[in-house]
Image (cartoon, rainbow, N blue to C red; front, side, top):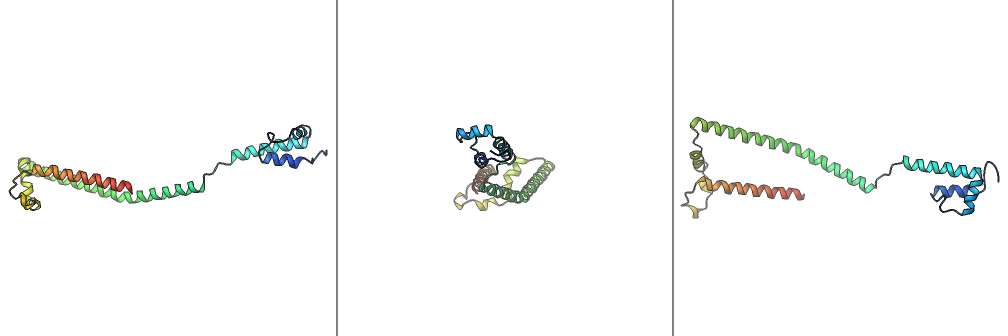
Length: 168
């Protein structure tokens, strides 16, 4: 046995690099490493470097997961870019509705606030009688019957649009 090198160093180094030291080696090799200073130093230093390398290197995710995340980020960015003008249009439409409602309320306050007479006259002013089928020509119902029907149609339309956009 030489002081600087040993004939069994190669065998000890291979076992340590494969992560099989000392569990998967022969008892005679373990006894040799206890006696040989070069082999024991080699096993100790190689194990320390392997442990340091394993803790220093983060586990990288698979390429498929990285690609999926990149696609998800790209799609979310596109949705956000598209959503900005839509949000602006919604805010503008809401502001216009509030402005029209405030104007209608101000007009009614100046006239004496006859809201019911105004609502009953609204279908005639908007010529909504042209929308009624001819079989209902004698129907002299109030506008109060039309309001729930239109509200229901708007609600059902909104729900349909929501579910249609949710699936895409």
